[in-house]
Length: 175
Image 1: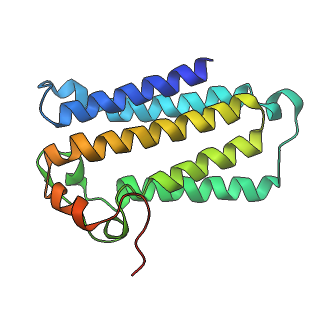
Image 2: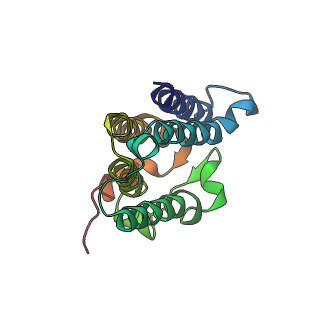
Image 3: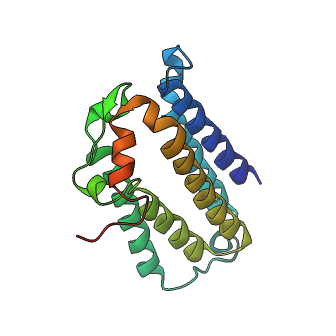
């Protein structure tokens, strides 16, 4: 249960961070909420792993190396989409839209790799707790990016409204 609570807390911290980025909260203290949200989601996964079938019964589900490979591929692609493909200025107020590379194919390209991480861990560690964690984190991530896409990003990223009109949402465009 604590893992699920950390997942929800991470989601709340992400929303507060976005609210800060729109200029509603004036203190720089809130800028760290994105990082704190990431830490909460990592703790959420860790707590669920500690209560998982693998830890309690000692046998991983599915083909272990394949699932771990999928997890690390998803993790790398999530980190790439959020921190490498975007310039450092992307996480500042009044930043400009990035519509090149993977961000030119579709909006929110970290969603699918993140979902891959969750699903591969859920299958690997098994059990109802991990399945619930996987579903909850993917659902919260989807809700977060929808709210971010509709409400927050157009307020602090220059050109985002036009970007929304030309680049599809989470389903890549094939050129």
